[in-house]
Image (cartoon, rainbow, N blue to C red):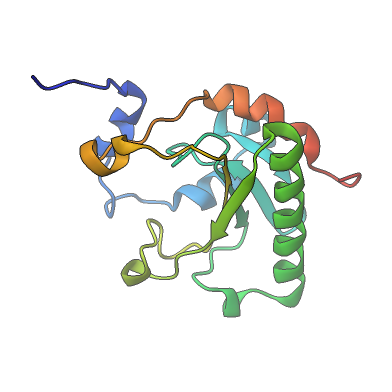
Length: 166
């Protein structure tokens, strides 16, 4: 007997044409009206970069730091953009420790399609909270990831940890 795990929120992602999109999703969000930040899952906007929850997370609290400028690799960033990006990664670390009570983290970036980048033209850094025992057989056996918290709940818990005071 086959079990099913319903994930209707993934429908838009799996049915959207990847390479036919007219605009980069990160550029669209970066240029979008800040009044739409809540619906776009943007937690914080700085001068050169923004912090966003991953709409299709590997685990609850999966954050990304994204430069506003459409660049594909770290060497294309200005020194100011690189510095701010790392400052926001530090704020993300703090937010995940305080807001999610995680016991560890994974982080990194994928450069180019051969490096696994889902959006190869727009650099972004991933920061993922981890807890002891958060992995199980679902990913290995069923190619399923179980995310135990809604995006809205993660947004509420984490957004207060970004800004000048953090």
